[in-house]
Length: 281
Image (cartoon, rainbow, N blue to C red; front, side):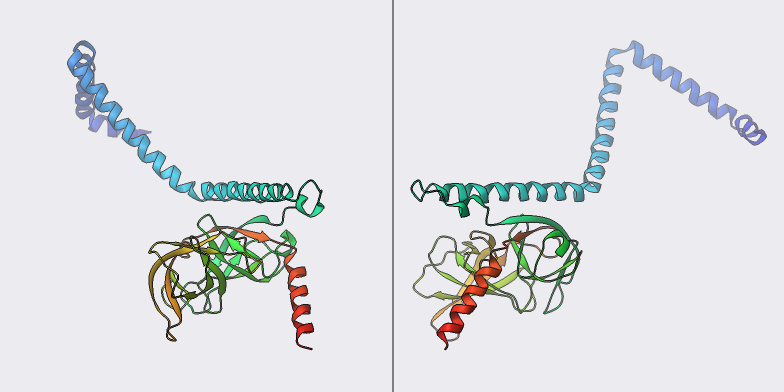
């Protein structure tokens, strides 16, 4: 306490000066319209700038929560779209009620990427959801931008995903505006690009045309964006195109994803395997 008193006494003239200056400014602003308007305009601008900066910092801090909420909204919208598709399908079979259409083929489970590699040839992603949440191997994984990959392994609480940027990853895909399909593959290197093969040379291909899933694999619904056409060249055998794709998903920053649960996939796979076995007898 004594130190505070000594400090005030030491700088009492400065305190008196600032006090008088403040008093004079208050009188000047109070009784002069021009000076008052300048003061309030400047003060409002300053306070507005401070509020804007504070809001920007708060928004940045809350960005993760906002992204998670957006992904949750996307999951809800995807469920509604799938339900609408099946409802429409049920009205295309005359008036006969078919119970299978009352069940949505695809469901979505929200998850977050908690670990990822992007600098290897066999990159993998780790999700914070596992078999206890209904996730199984060979389920598709997407985000708000497009296709991410396929579930590779699961434990009770975690899942390992093989992303598109894995040299072993192959996704059946097609050009959005043409009835032509091929296979997407990734070559080690650029995590923003991949390659599509199998498109015949007579198919006209436009730059920036969307490449999307075609639904053949039964892992992804049709119409999930994979990327856009960046360039084309003939394949080494001269029979088809090799198309360079600019991937829709930025794997360096993606965090919130949805796992597509199609529990009929195993049944379909078993039936196809049985058919292949019978044909080879």
